[in-house]
Image (tube, rainbow, N blue to C red; front, top):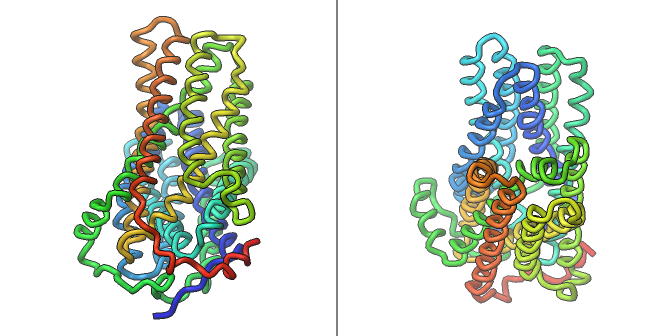
Amino acid sequence: MSHPSTFGWLQVIRLGFIQACMGAVVVVTTSTLNRIMVVELALPALLPGLLVGFHYMVQMVRPRMGFGADAGGRCTPWMMGGMVVLATGGVLACAGTILMGSSLMGGVLLSMLAFTLIGFGVSACGTSLLVLMAKRLPDEVRAPSATLVWMMMIFGFAATAVSVGKLIDPYTPERLMAVTSGLSVLVVVVTALCLWRLEGEAGSIHGKADQRPTPGQFKQTLQQVWREPQARAFTIFVFFSMLAYSFQDLILEPFAGAVFGMTPGQTTQLSGLQHSSVLAGMITVAIAGSAKVRGRLGSVQTWMVGGCLASAVAMGGLCLAGLQGPGWPLKLNVFALGVANGAFSIAAIATMMRLANEGTHGREGTRMGLWGAAQAIAFGLGGVLGTAVSDLAHWLITESGVAYALVFGLEALMFAVSAWCAVRVSRLAPQRNTQARLNPTLQESYL
């Protein structure tokens, strides 16, 4: 078997475009269609919320998708196939939303099929993309590469939201269908161009012997991966950290409005500040993890643990904000929370790519799929549990600030548990095989 070449920045950018394409389809289905259901069709906000939660539940198939890439030895078919399925789901989601205007039940059923396809598509394409990065990138460039790819995904979110918003105005169902269909065709074409001769043929990775599982060994392979102490500990870390990360998504703006008296425009700006600071945290870890400053600003592992602890402290600050109310430096607090969130999340992705290659070779996709499923479940539960706990706290406690403080305190505890899990992951690290490390001359092509 041939040894696949190491990726350079051009290949990373190509993968970033694929990630942006995934984000483009997802943002239309979770944002634009959400607004149309609630505003134009006057449907309960719970309906799009349940559909989005359903697509996260579908992503429990990620381990099977990753196993498919392991068994076949190539990620390209799963990435291309996943994008086609995702794009098809985007078109059907649009059709289902339009159908709700004349037949609610028919539209809901078609939308459930669409969001099933969206979940399958994101699982197949997203999992295999991370596996390919894990296999072809050395440690020194994983954090910067992950930051670049995720920034391109965020750019895909923003560019699509602005472009689609302009193209469907003035809104008509026909215009929406035409724009969504065009977007789906575009992302498939862009993905095909980015994948052209990117991966090459299947081969051993970094000189390791080829130990790919056979197609009928999924259950045994998943059990084998779960028995790996480090893989299991990292799964628990991903679940708790992503649950804490998503817990406050739907309650931060209501909190700022209820306790600090902010207007809808001001709370939207506050949310924008948080997203911007997340990017700042990601870029900081990318610099810290780069080859030129590697070790001088702390290891990626240190940033993962420290980011979780800093997030816990920032959530503790929001807890005090709920108790004190106006006068607390809320914007500074939210900025600090965003930086900490961005730092630990990009460090976790870089760690995920490294750990995928540790343990039995030929199981990289299954490991990545297991962690992806944990993340999807956490995100699906986070929004629901966050709002549910908030409602329960307000029912039990009449003082709004105290009720929110209780919720934020629970989030701080979850981030603290996540930090402990991250420490445990590092303690379970197996001895790295120094002979399997990449040639330093290859790494210098990134500098």
